[in-house]
Image (cartoon, rainbow, N blue to C red; front, side, top):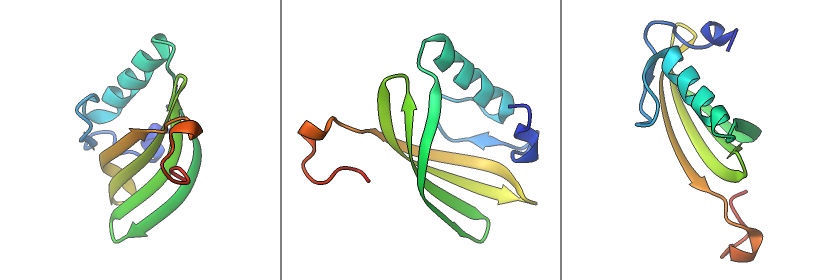
Length: 104
């Protein structure tokens, strides 16, 4: 988080995840809460990154504690900084429960 303001607008960051408050401090508080619950948030792979105009979308594999997720993050940028974020995540089931070849 020491370099967050290199990438995220310090005063204009809007967070559309209902579990996370706006601003860098809102995201930091969310991450700290997960860590205190023994569920630190970690991104493991970014499989796709697509950008057009001022929007960027990433498709990634991440974990919160023992649970793994397939995640889409959508970022809107202004002047080279992230000013808005949306996400959608879905738990990755164990391979024995996959109905196809899995998420990736």
